[in-house]
Length: 354
Ligand code: SAM
Ligand code: SF4
Image (cartoon, rainbow, N blue to C red; front, top):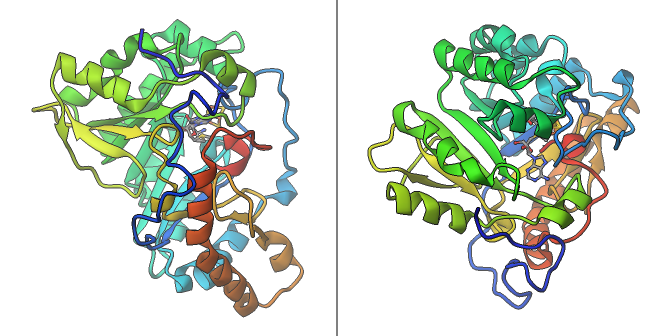
């Protein structure tokens, strides 16, 4: 079992650089928007929205409608330089008519990239339609290769989920999604014994396995009990087994990308706990009910775009407000880098749009 970092202990956790660290890199261009389409989910992942911790779900009328979303993208975000969009949730495959929405977003002048993050449970049925709509990049969560471990982690409600997710991954591969990335949240004592098996998925197929450090968002108790494993510990396991070299893969993400020598796919490491990347952050987030957030962890300056839109606010004024938030973003990034990730956050990834 890999060495574990304790949970909410900022003294022992290898947090971000100290507050006095200079701002090392010029701020990145902010051109990437993660859009949560729905806050509901058909899974109850222990690290995200565990069974029993029932959340206050949005009414459907509170979601941004497809037309409202299209209007915001076309009249506010694209003119401000956003050109890459990722749909997430909750579980985005639960959103009605998702393929039609994706086709409309992909057809907006200026859209360069549309991607999706899903738990894969409904993917076998939808993969061909999504591909037909123009989606090419897909991230699928797969925390374990052992059905019983997987089912315990995602809350199986008396019905095994693993096989259907695996079928979804196989279908996405057959349909032609490229890159196809597999997201693994690493939880000590749950899936850290099979990280090399998961890494091996990148060898024979061009599948890109990404290990995500467990963050204290969603289930503080589990985080406090289990702690988290630094990416470097996993990289060392891979080095010891196969060797590890630098790699590349198409994407807008914060992952550090490596490759097992000779492998068709890559290994990505998302290390928000051990190697805070806030000052490189190139994204904003739009929640299902239309709140624009500059940061996953920080609500400074967030804007209620849906209420403004429904209240008849002029689109030019909204554009101006978003532009002002864009200008604030580098400062928010640096502040968050200095604050680190060991706080407690009021919302889950499923609500913010992880
Ligand atoms: N339901 C979809 C899924 O699971 O892929 C999309 C939404 S989910 C909130 C997006 C990503 O956030 C997933 O890869 C999930 O594993 C990750 N995530 C959720 N809670 C997390 C946590 N506490 N720490 C790290 N990653 C987390
Ligand atoms: Fe649902 Fe994704 Fe959260 Fe799991 S991580 S509960 S699949 S939103």
